[in-house]
View 1 (tube, rainbow, N blue to C red):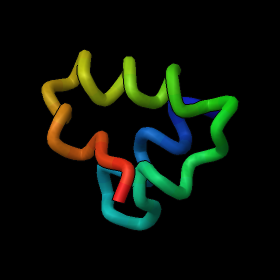
View 2: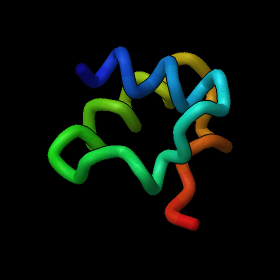
View 3: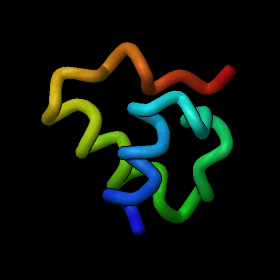
Length: 43
C-alpha cells in the first residue's frame, strides 16, 4: 500500500498530507529514496 500511495503522490493524484497516517513513514521513505523529498509536505 505504501508503494501505491507513493506512486499516487508522485503522479500528483494524492497529496502527501492525504496519505493515511499509518502509511506516511513508509511513503516518506520511498519518496526520499527516489529523490522526491520535495513532495513530502504537510500542507
